[in-house]
Image (cartoon, rainbow, N blue to C red; front, side):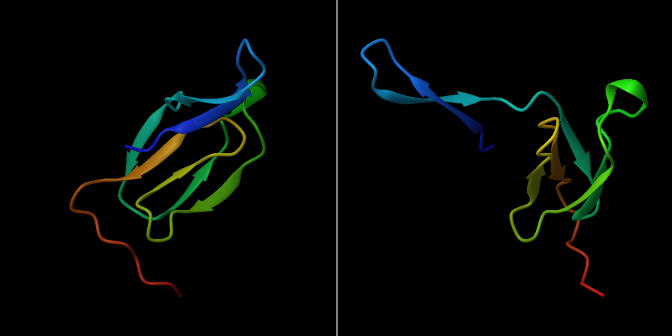
Length: 78
C-alpha cells in the first residue's frame, strides 16, 4: 500500500522524506466516496473524492484513506 510522505530537513539541513501511514483506512465498494472527517464539531466540510484508476484516494483534510475493496469493480462514469 502506498504511503504519504512527510518532507522535512535532517540534522545537516538535507531534505528528507519520511513515509507516513494514513491515520485511518476504510475499504469501500465504489470509486466515488464522501468524507466529512467523522462529522460533528471534530469533522471537516464534507467533500467528494474519486479514486480514478488508482484504487485508493486520501482525504486532503484528515488523511483518511479510502481503498477499493478486493473484487469490487470501478463504476462507469455517468
